[in-house]
Image 1: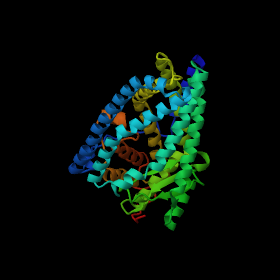
Image 2: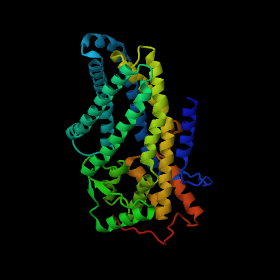
Image 3: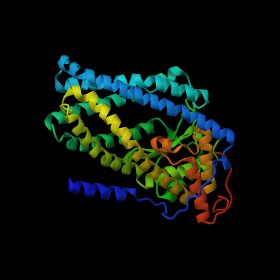
Length: 408
């Protein structure tokens, strides 16, 4: 255990390192210098709804799990499907119940987005489109439950140690598959000049060979986004077509590409998997210890109780995982700044993100800790200002003399 703890600490120290200079000054900026009072009020009101919705959703989820945890032992005795069969049925029933419990809050969130013109399409499409994804998730959960019950039956006390490599293998498969599915749902950049710029930017940043594709989401949302997805052979950068509808300049799109290439070059997708293992090992150990007091996870009647414990562990760990995510997002911003040498474009991206997604530029500290997987928009703007000052660019300008304002 001591050796494992030492390895755990060393892994954290290594993973925590980034290319962001340790002495980088962070300017303390006033949001009112970048956003109007009306914009700040609108984003605050918009996100306040989500804070309330999240709190009610969590309370409903925990209440449902408490009820299921009390009923499940009786169900396990009456199903007569064996330990694994009964456990899979109870587990799927639990997850289905949680989906229905969360549905009203998902409906409310979608209504709120529609009210603020952030979503498009019919309600029917919204309800039916995710079914393929839900089926895929159900299959993964089914396999996971069967494996977990089998391991808990075979290794009553140490199942959680055996489960870690199984979870890692399953996570790798899912990540690789997700990148492949993203490729099926997207297409190459159709603008020849933007395609050439993306390839040149990838070479400059060291991400040559990384596919860059566009996903058409304009029929369902007005929000803009980009992401690095996949793992190994399926790693790719995906741009939403809403980034290319004219609201973002060509320079701003280049900065976003530099950010996503930064994730690829710095291995954030693989590092995220390692962080998952570092959190999963003590988390599963804690789960095994707590559920062991009720018979252990090998008992199918304990599954809802185990899921309740997992939800509570996830709530406790979320602030820590957010810290890690924010650090890597900051590093990706820094990589984009180093590659594009265009802090003005970066600042424009972050200002525009607030408008396209109604993201609050400077949320309350408690909301920042609980919800924010990225630095705040003001923190990201401050980095562009610090980069400009550090490199003597002045007024957040470009190092190559003048910003291109042609539209993507």
